[in-house]
Length: 117
Length: 116
Image (tube, rainbow over all chains, first blue to last red):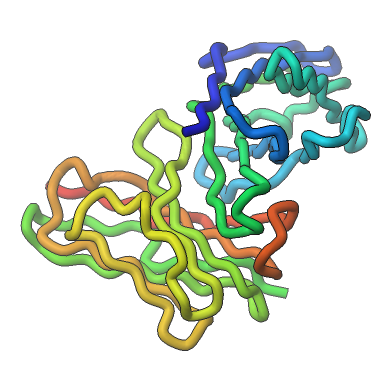
């Protein structure tokens, strides 16, 4: 079974600064997908960024980028120019490619990101 | 373009009661997932539907949990004889296609179940 570990229960960053959230995972599979989801307080979980394991290039989405280290099984999220609206719980998630879409996501426990004005 | 909706948003049940939680996926989405999110934890997979077929129910914690999607759209998660450990937020997610692990799962707001 796959596991996802987020070792930072809480992170705090000044507005406009850069913050990196850590995620490691354990799997014996070679083909899979990794995701970062954002869950604002009392609001719906939304996808921030996605990385296919077969791609060497790190994914980027505007101010959000990842550092994907497949050999180390590490998948960190970097948020540049932090904004107050970035405050939320951030979950790292893993999905196997084996099930052809039938697999659910395996989530970490989350990191609570605080943005200080 | 409505997103995934869930009802009720909040449910309080006495221990031993049965509850039914509803999920309305995005129109046309083939795949539907249920997750359970305990307080302070990440969501955990419960079950998966492709249209009306329940293809994976490996995450259901006990036989008190039952899910259905009879017409391939709306889904209901039923919990019989609720216990305190069932208290959690129940999340529903849908995605457009089946057979595509890259497809984005769109989440609903969840139903917060409290069992007294």
